[in-house]
Image (cartoon, rainbow, N blue to C red):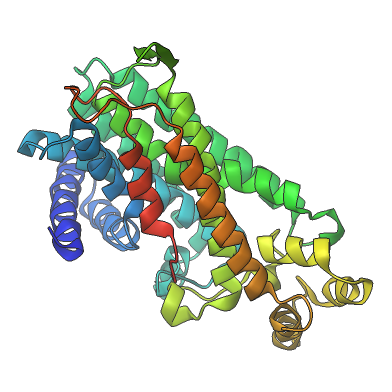
Length: 375
């Protein structure tokens, strides 16, 4: 199946889920304008983007079972994938308000769409919209998985990962408060901590862990005389993979165009604790650090000039050369992640398994989706 066909099949499940959520709203006797509003929010915020997180649940289930999925298996795996996309939408709608972002996925941020409509207190409405996107996850899980033996495992995964992500967001926000940015507090260790919690758990670990639960992978099992703890193995590989992904994101925020990445990069103007600035602070000269102190995260009439000064310093091939450092980082990260994948104990090719054992290809498939990405 082509990448486009795979995406379209996955999107068809979203339509079924959207209709189900809207029918539930109507069954609660919600006013017509509220039903229409929620429908617009779902369409605007959920099915955009690359959908890697959601589709990876389906891909991982197929890899673990090592066979084509039945229609019921596909729907359940895709539904779990769409629950991750709902979680992503909840995070992004909220994050855009916190950051005062302009665009997302090539269109105005959701809270700014309200502004265009001329509503008062636009943030108040969008805040509740984000809550409803999250609430839809648990409604869908209850409707479709309540009778499954792994239902509580699914609930715990979503709740634990959501909480961890919010912890990461907290550290990110207080490390770089908009009204009092002090980049002297930034370093690569702080950046790693933030991205592990803010990105890696929900963007990488969650997809594979949900698929593992659906396939009945236990917490511990014996394989070839060795004790395997598959969820710890998944954590060991997927969290560094998530870190790699966020470093890519940070790099593309400064180096990519809006046409390429679907948004206007704002990390420099917003004073974000980005991999790029942490790398510059780690390896830069005193003069280069001073330029950052004077220009990074400085808003005002001349912010475009200050932003360009930082970018010019990043781009200086005889100086910091962030593009070269990024290429070196990417090569090393991919090599290290592949080495970790090769250490995963897995059944031999001739052994018959029922899908309840971890397979290296689950991790290789995820890594292939993000290596050398441009958006």
